[in-house]
Image (cartoon, rainbow, N blue to C red):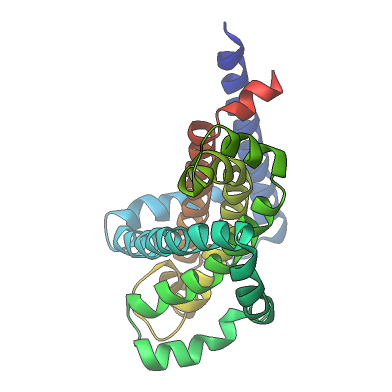
Length: 256
């Protein structure tokens, strides 16, 4: 068995063990509390499979669409702007005060205004998630570019590299690991914001499904929505991990 195969096997066994531990902990809590408000994992999984054939799948698709589109927009805007701010000191001196004044403000407080101007549909949810993830990617990219050694840039210049090649062959590869780490951390924030935004003034999405089940006193259906939202977050986390393995292959070489 090769080193990579052993590594993948070890990761699979680790995730399998963690899943079994969490399910066992959930089962023990359900047995101990003996309350209908906390169904067993088996009851929740049965409800999940049953509801996927009904409307749970549609709510999952709506939530996935909102998160994925928001992430793409955040990357499309935040990554190039972060590269520019990190390398172009004049532009950074102009934009940095604006970024650092607005970045610490909790963006969720703007939700009433966003709903007022963009309505109750997809646009308001996508804008809010983009608004939050964009700043995380922007600040991380800018700081990652600042850490690039000037000697590395000078070496490319001495070989005749122009400004565009500096961005493509030096700054972008150097900042990608930090950007993907920020994106991985942003997934949890995006899912939390999505739940909050979908929990009221809407009729679609996993957040709406969970709160609707709670209001109808259907805990098995509520936990079915929670399971799907957890799977959505884990799936996005895994996708970012795979992107890191493809785009930052040299990190595995450094670890050998």
